[in-house]
Image (cartoon, rainbow, N blue to C red; front, side):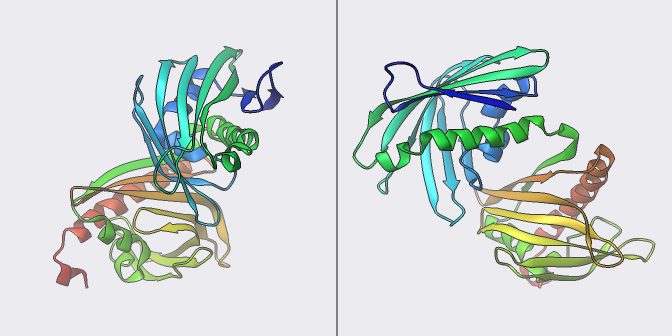
Length: 310
């Protein structure tokens, strides 16, 4: 990826133009701006996450993103799409909200994409069109914030698709219970393995930096340990942790990152599961089969009466 930054002659200090070149086709780059799962992976400065990312991708459609900083602080923002001309041009507004939920400012952002020889040149122009008292602390970091966001976007669009796994499932259970099933060992021992396998033991130190481990017994009677570290815990909506098998000496092999997002929908729960980055497509396929099977077992477990889950 290459980068250029510029400010037009006579432009205000609240106006910014950035150019980036990505080693990816522009259809993929444009999709990363309009698919909420992709946007959630890169929007915001380095080490920020987006537990809420809602996009109504049409002219006039609303944008809602809650950015969570490394210290746990949440920075909600809203906006709207003004123009969508796939895959070459996108115009949108965005605004950070104050403690009362009112916009502190409004920025008009135009994204243009051109492609040559399979590479995409992206030009981003951001201009402040409204500013309220107290907005300066946010706007002073606009250039660095966008620069870091585009660095993260580069990782998303250049990562091979066969190294990621996405699963979406719906569970007939409240979100709090589904979250508990992912974060409490007494629940996980009942489902954290595909059909035909069983969980021999499971421990969870549920805190950021805490370690989780479980032992899975395969149909041939052999035991296999897996584990990782919790990276982000936002009850009951979001869980991020590392995942790896352990070798005979207990060392992790082929570590990946798992993100679980839960949305409440009328007493039921919509789950979005994302795992990256695999060493090969065959590894992703193997993990995918295992996770699909485990989630089938989870659905059966959640459907049991409360006393049967004890």
